[in-house]
Image (cartoon, rainbow, N blue to C red; front, top):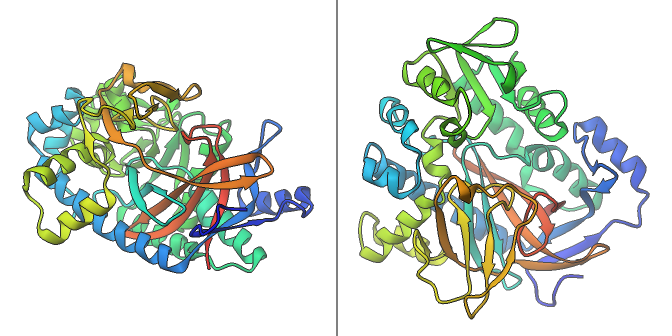
Length: 400
């Protein structure tokens, strides 16, 4: 059950025999429904009211435009790079590379929203650089929804991905520990399959760079690459400066574009909120969208209570700390890597997540919305604790 009067309806499918369903999903390409003996996939569907989905889709279009506009304001302004936490090593790369066309700074991104039981929608963050969950959203969710007789808005994801990659034409797709990291390897393989292109999959750790020329482990020169490798790590990892130089000199084109790191930074949301408060840069329609859907976010701890702190480049819940009404630390993530030791933090008003009662107990429901080739197109559900971390479950989201 979901809380009474919720905009979500919970359809429990766990009475169905799990093993053959896991096997069917495995054949479709979702090979990590069970991970290390644990059930990652919750066999259920959280069904969203159609009017809530319509508002979420419209909000995503508006916020995509607003954040794109903010990136163009920040571009080549080093004081603002510093304000939103961009590592100085990457500034030259960002300055030298031309900005993509409007709405296409990232062709493969995912908004994460807090959608409350009453339908209130608040943006938590945008993963505009290296979002995962693509297989869950594009392959597993439509199948699960179809089995349950529920409509899925995710069916256009594959076609939009193919159109995006037809434009970008990567010759290589990479992730860390390709072939052994099940989720990341399966994700890039699905991206390649859906692209319709002949593309090599490689391990980032097997790449070599010499005078700006990037080669794979077999000595093949790479010119155009999509990598599930967060761009901020170029400022930290050994060889990261060489990779940034390869991009600066034009020897390597990265997709998503280098400027996706500007969209990725949670500091950009603080900049947008600051401009909203000062009445700068945005028109009245944009200001209404910011007021309705973006949480008050700052790069300093200005709240007395009921707020969240997190690294501008935190991922999978790492670095997230929740503070209660009195300003006392209530909960912090213990599983993900705390990237706040490397990058600055932002401070954001807390938002309510819908709650669902499952066989695992009461869980908080996080709503993801993929944006592919500039179009909001795919729901991703994750269920877990108040902080949606690396141990959260995947649950299919459908629309009634």
